[in-house]
Image (cartoon, helix red, strand yellow):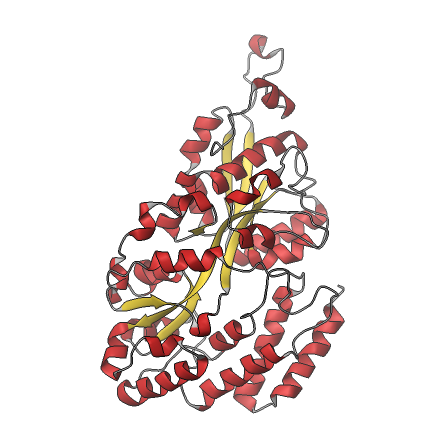
Amino acid sequence: MNTLSTQPTRRTILACGLAAPAWAGAAATPPEVPRLTVAAYPLLDKLIRWVEPQWRARHPEVALDVVGRQWLDHHTAMTTALSTASRLPDVMALDISFVGRFAQGGGLEDLRQPPFRIGDERARWVAGAYDQATNARGEVIAAPADIGPGTMFYRADVLERAGVAAERLTQSWDSYLDAGRQILARTGARLIGHAQEVKDIVVRAGLRSGEGLYYDADNRVQVESPRFVRGFELARRVRQAGLDARQALWSNEWVESLRRGRVATALAGAWMSGQLARWLAPETAGRWRAAPLPEDANVGYGGSFYAIARRAEPRRKALAWDFIRLMTLDPTVQLRAFKEIDAFPTLLATHDDPYFDEPMPFLGGQRARRLWREAARTLPALRMHKQGPFADEVMGAELDQVLERGKSIPQALADARRLLERRANR
């Protein structure tokens, strides 16, 4: 199968309303150049500008406008645009946390339908990423661009000073905490930035594709299930043992702890290697390594998708789809995204590229991309719910009550359940 469809014929361009009008030759003023508008957030907006020359080669007659906003501002603007059908872009980028919210409504095109027929390309993407954008009605409302296979980053120099073998971090959660006690006793470094990092993994671990994190297929709240009990209990054990630095992720204090080796591990997506190397702690090159998450938990951290609004300009939808194909099905674009902004590619054709086998200097020469590739290929596609972002906030707040104020775990989970039940059908 060719990587991309052949460029649109003149008939396709006519169907999109892009052919020059019959009177153009005689007009004193040339017609306005057609434009395709793409709304995105960092760092996708930068990537789109990088690939603009490839877009011009495919469609020299169509200008590309990139509307970039900060992550939250972008998704707020897209929510407003979909609800009002005002200022809709031709293509919108979506983070996975918002895919579930938008999938429940009817504001996005079902890409299974003509002229898109995304199902014809399904086998070319990581299965979990494709399925993640499928709603309860079976509609596929976005095309997958990148994913974040979960991994543990650890400071090899801190472990060496503590006399801790890296394998102890991954065998089990009990072993992870035991290693953390030894690290703290011998070096003074905390095991992790915040106990919530542990909870976030445990409540997701073991879920299979099609299952929901907070709500099941019948919209029943699941937060009193054993995985939430265990996640909260492990987080509490981390806090009681003094193993977390009590620092909010992405805070200045947390970043400084990563730089100075005051925190031994960071549980995140594969993209974290680039964050550390380029912005957060470039001076720590060679001191970090990557490993599987404890108990081989296979969870995802984020992911980007591209979608088309149903009420977007109809004459440009074929072009919008061709742009999405460029971003998600062109190996050169997918690999550039991986190399430049650490966006792990969903396109399977890229996974055999020699880049995956190259040693990573920041990780001490480790060939960590092989580890992430295996995790990506088996990443489950969890059922997304429109109240997912709200549920994240509720569970975070209840965990804080447990950690900071001694609230009982059964009471915290029961209170969370009642809140989520009230919001389930909104």
